[in-house]
Image (tube, rainbow, N blue to C red; front, side, top):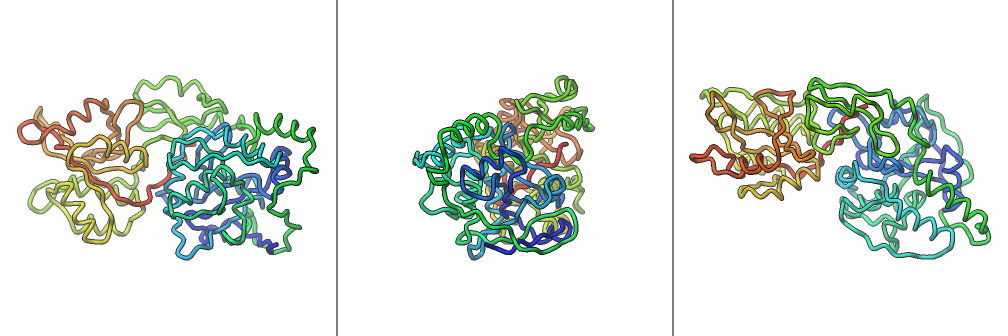
Length: 444
């Protein structure tokens, strides 16, 4: 048992780190059923992470919605005292490394199969092995996602002897693995003794009669999972907005469909609306415009790289980068400079599409060589590749910050891989950083 420390959100926020585990106590009857079935105090698990604008986000895998992120402050306001912050007690715990695999799961469907299997195991005392997978496309439930992220990122096994699919939310509160920090409240901090703890052991068979088994399967499978807020609230269907490019951003209903008619028609964009885009949605506020060096040359590669550094949260380093570089440069030049100052760049020089596919899958932008058309002639240029979406490459040009350029994938790859000399291509060159990417901006 631990002493419950109730802390107001404003006081707690500076103490919350990237990669902290958020364990949620039930707010619904279904959530209490989950706790009853597992013999544990928690019905949901998620992870804390900061976005590039410094906002604290709740990254989670949740039923009917899949992988998503929302402002943690809104969740705390809605469920005061039900969210507890826990931190793995391993020496030099690398929280940002744990965040990266969680970001890979954004937009992925919920893992109903694994959820049903753990429900059967807990209720019947059986063990159904589901070997661990390192694939980000494997469908997982909430605490399974946390176990996966810890195992793949900072290389931590949170529950020795258990597969990822056997880890329930309460297993993550084992004091041998993590330390309790505090419970989050939207008001001032207070301290009071914790209620009697529910031991983290499976419910005994004599506590799970057939009637309860049928009730749990009937209720939990269609409606529960690892949710703390129940069905998709109707009020969210009105929270749609239109960006400067004419694209509507609307939440989706529990079946994955757009919630308003504006999302169906999108005449100014070929990209389908998503509540959270699958590519690196770089905020305009961190984009660096191209500048002219003292020798009269443009600084497009350095500008694209400056934006990329800010995306990875390296704001002070990005300012130094901007102030101390300029003029013409190749991807290899920028990567070599990144290595010199202690970063870990990844470079592509052979036009391998797998490099950009990997950047897209991990939401890492890449500074690439790509021609710029001026007066009908192709000029040497560098832009920021931010991902692929619905068959199009999405590019951010430092000659015109704030706008996305869409190029059909096959045409984009052909131009990017084309040799520069004599044919105006990108020579297949690009670079990015092996660092923690930012999580998506809050579209709603």
